[in-house]
Amino acid sequence: MAADAPKPVRVKPKLGLNALSVALIIIGGVILILLVSALAVAKLGLVPIPILSRFYDGPVPVRLVQTEPLDWDDFRVGLASDIYEQRERQKEGYAVQLSEQELSGLIKSEAEKGLRGQAWKIDLIQVAVTPDYMELYSKLDRSGLGNLDMLIRFRPVVDSKGNIRFEIIETRVGDFKLPVSWGRALASNVFSRDLGSWEITIGGENVIQSISLLDKGLNIILSK
Image (tube, rainbow, N blue to C red):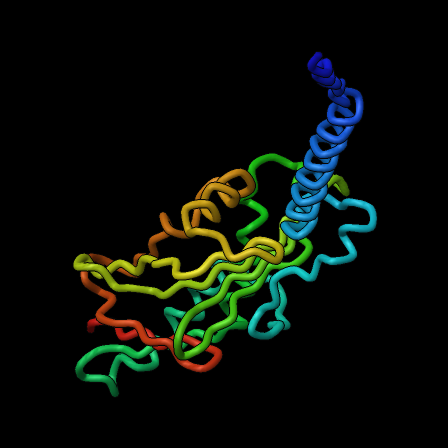
């Protein structure tokens, strides 16, 4: 008589243990995502986050420019006086040089007027000039609830009508280099106009002939 075949042993799946492992993985993934997101916010410098904000450095300007606010009307009077002095000795046109101290002074006096609302306060704003680019650096505070540290590098261009406009080449917010469009979007939430829409006109059409970048200043050629 043949021996009875052994009955297969049914092993119950350890559903409890597997479910716990999956739950721990999901929870760990969520925590990791939250930590990475919090670190990204901390590195932007927009909101202070305990512990993580210690890793924030912020954008670094090419140099600090020490200056006092310069009233626009006073600046125009000085510019007109400079041009008048050249009237007799210049035959082709006028050469006007602007220092980064003057540019920083102008933007200090005008930037407050361009803020959207009273929530933002300008702690520092300046313009530095190198032979390769101009640089706008600003530190803003939102009533102690947040910060916006921004650095924008751009080049001035004279268009076909003799107006100066600005081409943005680099935008940094906090510790991150952002696409130009993102930087503009952030800046538009603080200022009523973004740098890319600014134009400078002196006199009538085609008065500005050219503009060149110097070390710590600009050289502008005006038609006579």
